[in-house]
Length: 151
Ligand SMILES: [Zn+2]
Image (cartoon, rainbow, N blue to C red; front, side, top):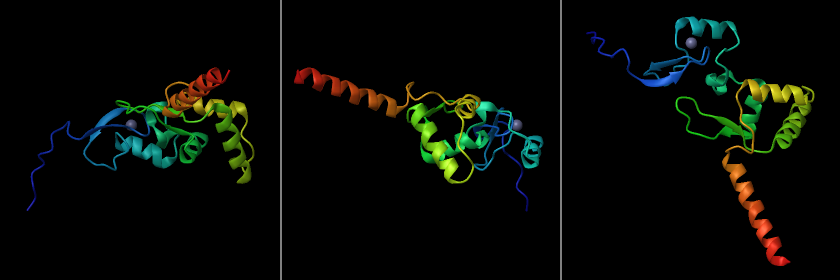
């Protein structure tokens, strides 16, 4: 017995194609691509063209490593695409990741390379809106208050 296909055309959660960045809908949680063409492109190793919209799957190696290390994280629920930002100051992230890459035998990361990776993946700076940045500012303000009181 076969059940009739009753799935409406626009069913499922709205998703961003990992390959081209287009918005589409699918009911499958594992769905990554908007079309067989995009799946084929991805399987062939074609670089994603979605830019920031492609999300973590389309990030550069540098940004992916930052994400794994926790130096980059989503700062908004982002509809339809979450916004990612550095969770630590720029210099800290660069130093730390560069050290890790070199330890793996991949060599240090240049400042230009690092800046370009963040730019191409649409990663916001640390100071903008990350919870950690807000927390750090609060801490600095408290320190300043304490210093004022001490004098
Ligand atoms: Zn696509």
